[in-house]
Structures are given as structure tokens and as C-alpha cells.
Image (cartoon, rainbow, N blue to C red; front, side, top):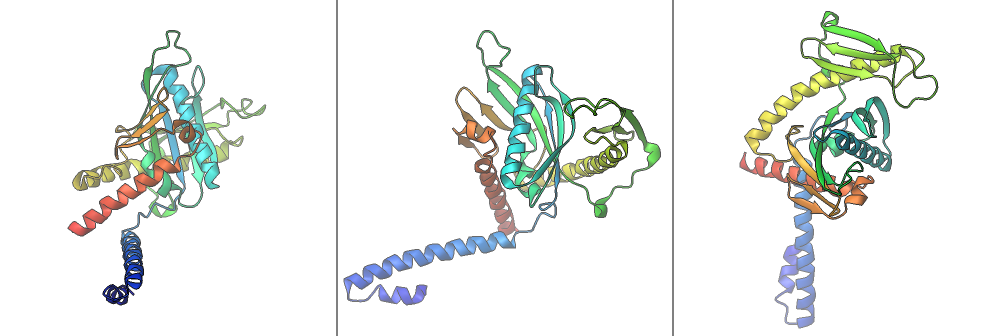
Length: 301
């Protein structure tokens, strides 16, 4: 079609020539879009993209304000999950003294959950006037987010039961009238690595134990994967996909209503929308940037 249109450009009829130029421009644009889509389809797929995830939000520097902010982030992810039609459940939580969470672990199930949320791992910084601040000064606090693809039977790490310490305790937090009456919550410590997991969501100790073991498998696998990702990211200079939770990835500036993602220099003055769960406008540019990095790497190879 492009070649036939090129011939019409030299037609003596000026009207026909103008039409041909317009058609040629549209055809070239379509060809470019199709080429790009084809390149994206040829990119190597992340085997974890269609997996469910565990998401951990943990308060960092900033005391009570950091815990309140971790509550904001947890609700942002919950609302985003609801908008996507995903199922979300709380596995464990430690409440902050003035609201929010010192730490919360949630499980999200749905289509391509990891593909959408895998770039959320890292340190999230907040700048705002805390509710507890009487002088009206802006404070800076931080939380860390870890996104862990749920371990499946195929990748099960062999865990020796003698390497585990299993404790039972009474669950705390939301859960209705039954939750504190029995020691149904489970805490498992993996002694060689020091990894500790808890589950207090179910009233059944047996169910909590099974969930805690699943989370332990996921954490151990995730630690192994994080090390591999960091090595790969360093070798390919990928700013988006390292998944290092100590890396400062994003700032939420409430006085200015501004969100900045430092990895791709993305700034949006839509903080209120985003914190209410409209996270797609941040996630899609990150996916695009990661794909662009992959395409460049593919071309170099």
C-alpha cells in the first residue's frame, strides 16, 4: 500500500497528490506502530508476570508518620487491586500507635498481578505536615515496599523442619469478636536466614500455618531472585527493574500535590488521584521504560 501511494504522489492532479501524501503519512505511522508492537511481542517474557503476589509495606524512618504513610500506601494498593478486579487479603499486620501500620503483608490474586506491580518494590518517601505536627512544618518520612511473586510448587525451596521455630500467639487488629480468644496466629522463624513470617488472618491455626509456610517459601525465593535481579540490573543499567527495596524510587509531596518517580524522571501533579488507587498512570510509563530498555539491550545483543 505504501509503494502504491508513493506512485500517486507524482500524479499531475494536485488534489490526488495531496490525498496521497496524507495517506502515505498515515500508512507510515501505522507501519511504525505495528513494528513497535511486534518488537514488544518478541521481547522475552518474565515467567513471574502472571503470578499472584505478596506485598509487604513497612514503615521506615519517620516514626508515627511513617506508619500512617504505610497505611496510605496499603490502601492505595488495595484500591488499585479492586479497580483491576483482583482479590486482596491481609496476611499479617502490626498497627502503628497513631494509625497506619508498622508493617502489613497482603496477598493479591488476579490476572497479571506481578506484571503490573513488580516495579513498586523500593523506598517510597513522603513529604507533608504530619497530623501530630503543631508548628505546621513539612516532615519527610519513608516506607519500603516489597513485591514478591508467590512461590509455586515447581520452585519450592527445600526447607528442613529442624531449621524452623514455630510459635503460636493471639492475633491482634481487625477480625471481629473471635480473633483474640485463641492462640491461632502463627509465627515461623527460618533460623539459617533469620527470615520471620506471620499469619493471623484465619481463625484456624492449621490454615494460618499453611499460609505462613507459603509466605516463607515466597520470601526465601524472593531473596534469591532479588540478588539475581540486582546482578542483572547492574550489568544492563536497568533503572526500572532492579527491585532493590533500599533504592529510593518515589516521592509523594502532599503540599504540592506532586508525585515523582525518580527512576524515569516522571512527575505528576495528580497525587490525590494516585493515592486513591489511580495508579495506572504511574505503572504504564514504568512498563514502557522497562520495555524500551529491553529493546535497546536486544538491539545491542
